[in-house]
Image: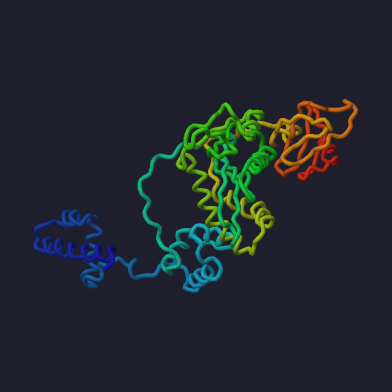
Length: 391
């Protein structure tokens, strides 16, 4: 017997006891009603129902009558059938977001209940106590989270997903796949944010070697020896904040769990198997829909992004390496020989200190002070077109 019906039976027995005492004249109606927790008018109605129908007259009619708002059986069957045919394995929230996108009008709770009753999904275990979450930044742009997640996103292919999101409202500004997380992918993610919104105040990262130099494993980072990424942040005036535990990055860690569940299933449904197609799907479909569903209002109106000098951005968000020109007017860089072309400023650059810039797409450039001497393709061959575009 369900708890609701058990309560009904107990209420009937209490009514019989109080009715007996009232019939004997030991109680007035108001006192009898008060003992049952009802008003005198309701007590008189109970007496009338009992006289006409017996104890069954006291049963709550809501237990025996179907709700006028109850969904038709064929709608329930169609919902469960759609889940089995195309979305089996998706969690209830993920399936409900697609159900609404495809024209469904029922609530999340109703959809979850029907799938649980059909034993297509199981009830989640009750969450235990956890520590208090850190308060979000009050304004968008005050703090960004950036991290990568290595996972088998499509069958047989393990990629890194690079995510750059806002702490204030959980908006994902940049989300893309790459072969391996590193300096180039981190700079690319931040560049996409800056081009679209401006410079953030700070960025919160793990202690990966492309973000920080950590002299002792598990220890404090060395803020006095910046990495290529740290040097770029210093030039842009963006504060870097290291995280010292997975719990400290709980907000981004939970988002990656959601991506690993949802994105894998959506790529499979779309039949996507290549990185280029996957990144296009993320930009056009997944990220906009994800932001609509998971973004939260920021505590304050407005934002704290600062406009950036876009003409210098490319030469900051890149790797920079110091080199000395050899006697043949060439620069050696990671197995490549970069020939300096003749120009109008100097006869030669022998033994001159120069900088080699490597951009996130692998292209190279050679600088003497603020002047760009030449541009190169990733294989070291000259690329005069890129130099003209920069000029």
